[in-house]
Length: 323
Image (tube, rainbow, N blue to C red; front, side, top):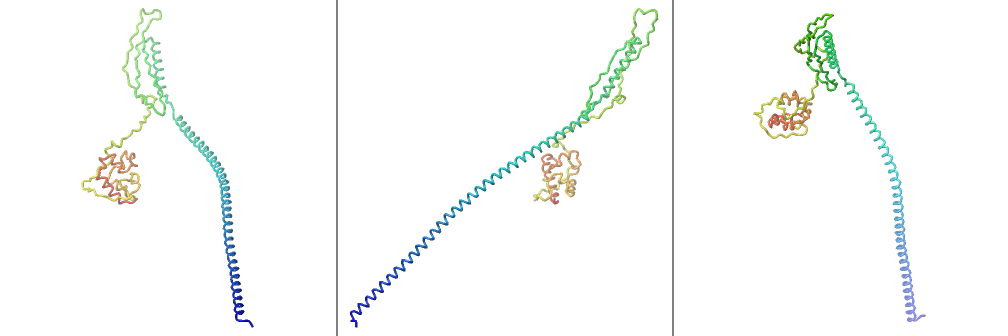
């Protein structure tokens, strides 16, 4: 049997062994856990580095692909742009040539029409020449009859062109001579002196152009420019003594004094109001010169007619009519 001392030592030894075993097991466990933790940390870092490298590589490849595609597309766009520019230049040249030819053709037609209308009327000159021939013939006959006649010819006028026809002379003065009786002479004897009777001049007679073959063409008078500021009879002034001027609210969807006369005349109701307040304006001979002006503008052209009372009356009546 073991003594109490031996038992105590044995138990103490067993406890030491258990403590040492526990410490050993705990040390092994702690070492294994730390190795696992370090392994996890290393794997995450490796994965992070790998993903980072792959990301940079992918971004670089994408950037290179985009750059290459951009260069290709830019080249295609430049080529297409050059093609379109050449096509546009060709179309512009064709359009310019077509328009040039059209304008030249129109100008040639206009010139041909002018040429076709340029007719020179020489009937007046022919009549004057015939009169001169008749005068020369009559003078020659008088000289053959032994008379002394004074030769007076008619001036031949200059020919007139058709575009600006010149008015034919209304009167042509033709000298009329009365032949004196012939002097009888003997066939064998000659008179010592030649007696030349004075020609008896008849009064000059006016011959109207209507009796001659020359017809008087009407002269086209040039257009007369009218100063609308000088016109003083645009319309019959209405009675505005009872008109009280007040403030009016006029919108854009109604007629007013800011509307032109042409727009007012296109509406039957507004036209009736205009003719009732301004009688005679629409039928005025110079109305075409102001038909595209507004009533407000006419108040500055003819302030004596378009007074403040007339403008208020027109604005009041016209603002009740919708456009």
